[in-house]
Structure formats: structure tokens, C-alpha cells
Image (cartoon, chains in turn red, blue):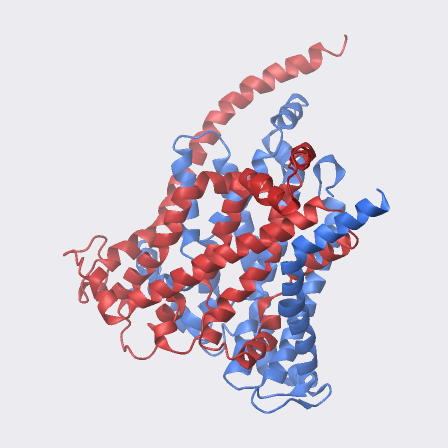
Length: 294
Length: 297
């Protein structure tokens, strides 16, 4: 009882102190945030603004903040001059199929690892974790030779097929999540005569919305932005993905890069990703918390 | 567990992991071993590989461009990764407070991370343009005459580092998720014990955050060893090899000079370095990383 008043008094003191402090730190934080947000958003703002400028205006210095005349036609011009529609379509096809493949194969493997204590479970799981550290450049040459022997060069197959065989990082995320599902659910399922595969898609998958959304987003973004693999495998322009096509825009065929069109391309390249986030943001953040990247 | 039950478990486990297992053998294990074999050969991809022993590895150590790429990559990692992580942590701490327009700030900070890859490279290629670019224009507000960034061997690498800081939002999200996992009761307890903000951060928040920090440290270092897009789109490894990244070097050796053997040797050195880094960080992490409930199985 003797010691009680001391911490109490101290607590009361620091309590009121920290309250006053909190308000000053809050003001400082707020100002810091405004400045950093401004810095972070400025390039984006210029990206959009430049995408709407005329060819002449994009070369002006100092750059104008807002376009003098708004060239909405830039957004149609890019589809005419650079086969942009084809690039976009190619990237979308590869992205969507990849997401589909990753979801199925990763969810299967993650379920196998988390639900069954079979022989070798630990060993294979360690190997899985090890492949997470495996850099793509370290395996790309044999893979390239392998796919070229299959005559898959200049097709989408080398970019799509591997996704149907699971990806380590996503299996790890989903396995963490599946481990949190209560065993009782599956016992109940078994009593009801549910087969093992049915339990996977009737019980485990429907409960895993946020985790699956996270995996889908990761897989799509990875595929959408990837440059190295498409550069290796795709050679004809009508099969280029968006990144490959865009990278070729800076090449020597333009003496002055068409900045305004490059910015149109960059804005349009962002659209699917931003849309995805807008739709799945809540699930995504929840997924990150639940799958325990922490 | 009965014998029958254990067989059943094993059967279903292998059934479910079969796709991954096949993928592992075909798309990971086989390429690693093949790459090891190629690394001891002279191989132009068209003609069959010819065994040359350690020649590729010996050449590597005498190759100026190899060392250039190592230095460039390490410089990029050791400056870029810590700065980016600190920035991400700073943003996360700022945005973990109750502050007006918190949702807006979080989204705004994360937004640049959505412009990754080639689109980001193109955007910053323009920003760093010495004649019409935004970067030097803004510097001129403060009376600074900016360099030619990507065209100057002294500044090109730093320009790329500056660009990566722009995507600190990804790390911020992960830190925010981690911060939400820090029990409020622990922070309260620390306050009651008379710990100030900084001490609470150092002794409570940081240890609780260490698994996220570790995860990100490993991932960012490994990622930074594999920079390719920026070098390919923005600089082609130049000027004067100042952005000659390791993987760009590897790519050029294999697919421009058709020296798949030498390139495979480069790949194996990368693989070994990544493994060593991971192992070191994991080992060190036993000391300082705190897992809730003493570890996760």
C-alpha cells in the first residue's frame, strides 16, 4: 500500500504532461505530413498534368503546373501510334490468368501444408521457404533454355504456366492464414461427410477472403509490372506486354522522347492497380494483418 | 496418431502440395542444378555446352565489369535500403497517431508505390531531365543548380536511390499493420512506469515491431540485389557504367553476348550471396527479434 501513491502521482503528472505534449507533437506531425504528402504527390501530379499537354508545351521550361490547353486527344493518340491497346490487352490477359493460377495452386499447397501433418511436412516447408529467397536471375538461364526447347519462345506460356505451380511467398502467406482456422470447423465438415477437397473449397476458401485478395493483388501487381521475364521471352511487338512496349518508347527511334505520351502510358498503366486497390483495399489491409507478415 | 491416420495425413498432404512440388522440381530445383552445371561450361545457348572447369569463376574475378557491378549494387543496397526503411517506419509512426485526415494521408503516401516498374522509371526519367525536368526546377526554387542526374556518372546512382525512396509507402503499410499488433496495454504500462515517448518506442514498440523490420530488411536487401528495370529503362547501365547493376550485367552477358556459361556463374555467385545474407540476418535475428508468445510454429 505504501508504494501505491508514488506511481499514481507520477502517472497523473506524466499523464497531463503527455497530453500537452501530444498536442504539440500532433501539430508537428500534421505539418510534416502535409509537406511530405506534397512532395510524394508532386511527381504524380506532374505525370497527369504532362499527359495532357501538347507536344510543344511538354518541352517548356520551367514546366507549367497545369496544361495551357488540355490535350485530351493524347489519350486517343497513344492507342493509334503505339499499339497501346494490344499491349494493354496482352498484359491484362497474362495478369488475370496468372492470378487465377496462383490462387488455385498456392491455396492448394498452403492447405496441404497447414492441415496435414504428413511425413516430410517440415522438410518440404523449409524448402518452400528457401525458394522464397531464390532470385529469379539465378534460375532464368536454364528456364529460358528449357522453355525454348519446348518451343514456347515468343508465346505467353513461359509467363503464365509457372504460376499454376504455386509461388512460395503466397503459399507461405496462405499457410499462415489457414493455420488460424479452427479445427472444429473441419471436424464438423468431416462428420457431415465432406471429402477433403470439398472441405478445401467449401470451408477453407470461403473463410479466406482477405488472405486470397492479398495474394491476388500481389500476383497481379507482380505480373503487371514485371519486365525481365517478358523481355526475355517476347520478341514480336504484337505480343509485347505493357512494360516491354513502354520501355521501347525511350529507345532511339525518337530523338526527343514524347514525354507527354510516355506520361499518358504511365497514367494508364496505373489504372488497373489503382482500381484493384480501391475495390479490395479493406480486404488487402486486413489480409496483411491476418496473414501475419508481422 | 495411429499408423493408418498418419498414412492418411501423408497421402492428403502430398495430394494438396503436388502442384507446388512438381513446380519446385521443374522450375526451381532443376534450374538451380542446371545453372550450376552451365557455370562450369562455355555455352552460347545454340551449340552444346563445353566443360571448362572453373574458368568462368576465375574470369569473373579478373573482370572489371563484374567488380563494377558488385560495387554499384552494394552501394545501392547499403544506402537505399536503410534510408527507405527508416522513411517507411517514420511515415508509419506518424500515421499511427490519431491525426486529422489520417485516411487521406495514408492513401497519399501509398499511392506512389502503385506506380512501380517501367511506368515509374519513365516518370522519373523525365523528372531527372536536366533541361525540362521537374527535379532541377524545384531545386532552383532554393537557388540550387542541379546536376544532369542520369547523365552524370557521379550522380546517376544517387538519382536511382532517390527514386526508390518515393515508394516507401509499401514498407509503411507493413509497418502500420505491425504497429496495430502492438498491444495498447503494453504502451500504457510503459507510460505508467514513467517512460517517455522515445523510451517507450525504444523498449516497447521497436521490439514488438522487430519481426516486421526483419522481414522487410531481408526482402528489401534481396530485392535490391536484383535491380534490373531501372537500369534497363533509364540508364542502360551508364553513364560510364555508373549504374551497371549486377543483374543487368548478368542479363547482358547471357542475352547480349550469348555467354550463358559465364552468366550462370554470375547467377550462382548471386545465389550464394543471397543465401549467406539471409542466413546471417536470420541468425542475428535470434538475438534481437521478439516473437509474441516466444515463437511461432
